[in-house]
Amino acid sequence: MFKILDRYIIKTFFGPFLFIFSVLFFIFIVNIIWIQLGQFMGKGLTTLQIMKLLFYLGVSVVSMVLPLTVLLASIMSFGELGERYELAAMKAAGISLTRVMMPLLGVTAVLAVMLFFFSNNIIPDFQRKAKNMLFNIAQTKPALNFTPGQFIDQIPGYMVKFDKIQGEEGRDLDGIFIHKKASNFENQQTIVAKKGKFANAKNRNFMQLQLFDGYIIEDSHAGKSDNVRAKQPDQAIKFDTLVTHFDISELINKAIEKEQITDDYRFQTYTELLATIDKTKKDNTKTAENISNDIINQTNSVITYMEKNKTKAPVKSQYKLDSIKGDKKLQILTNAYSRLDNLKTNLDTKNKELDPSVKYFSKVVIYQQRILTYSFTCIIFFMIGASLGSIIRKGGMGVPVIIAIVIFIIFYVINVGFENVAWSGKMSPYLAAWLPNIILFPFGILMTYKALTDSQLFDSEKYKTFFKPLTKVFVKQKEHKRYQ
Image (cartoon, rainbow, N blue to C red; front, side, top):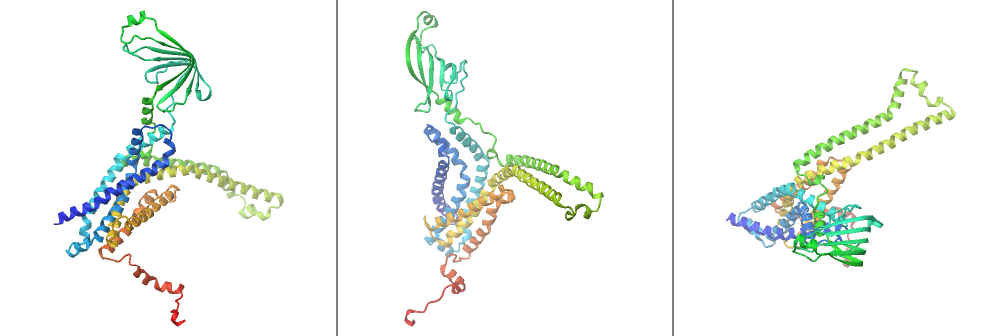
């Protein structure tokens, strides 16, 4: 009986789970696209390239989408069970709420483990692909590195030489020679022109070249032997203006997929990040020592001066400021103030030099720890969601969604808030990464306890009674109109 019940509960959970995951995944992807919109607007990307980019970006948002999906799905599924009085029927049959929650707790634990391996092994690889693709798309078009006076074979199927490249953005050309690579089964063609100019093609996959005052030299002996070709004259067509297009789609596709960025902590697994953290910590220690030594060297002259004068006359006769008169006293005070002001300025400057190192270290540590923490967040969100769903006994997309969004916003604000504190160096990044879970875990325990004890958590009359002594102080009771 229990196996049938377990299957039913899991089926009830996965219905809203798959729907919510799809919706949230789409929302997060749209948000990323909106942020990155300027980078690939008007770049002439193909549908395949756009879909590939969305896939790369989508993989990286799974770590944030999954915990929120678990929260929403657990609230909705347990809310529906309560709304249809199925939870009440189970309790009447002697099945406790703990027993009802166990199969889904097991499912959530499996999802949490899968999220860890997904975040550790798959997301870093797709982060690298997405970042490189966005970087390459941001470049309007891969630059063709033409060198004046040299034959270049970068354009697929052609050999090109320009005697001079000049003008704005290197668009004006002199002495143009273009030879089409052809086999024995194709017509040979060569274009020679005195002047030319690069123009903007409507289709990004083509390069447009305007040629002036030249010749098209071509034979029409496709499929014939070299001996026959040598005996037959070529035909030459003179032109004043010729507009030609070169297909560079293959070159662009290779450039978009090219991985130029390889050194980023977000491309590393959990164990690889340990080595990065170790190296960053050593570098930061070395930087801090250099800054400390620099500050000490700057103050060394003052310390030496004070040490030198310890063995001389008593302090009173030597440093008593009141005994010094006139301009000398003002000069001493001005010098002392200047020294202190210089030291303060130097300290502020050195702190600013150290800030980027501290921030980078915190970013690496928090990113590494979140590979673990988001997995635990799934379990905590399930505890909160299942308990709230069984208490409020409301299914559907109304009250459960509002409550889940409020909880997630609180989690997100705590997460970002402590992250910023850690970046400033005022908190350990390890603590900042785990604090959201540490704060929400007691709340999850409390909600689970309230659900197991059938507490009326949202009973408004109960809260009115609790706050009644306080409201009496501020609210004056009115007499009934009949007695006024």
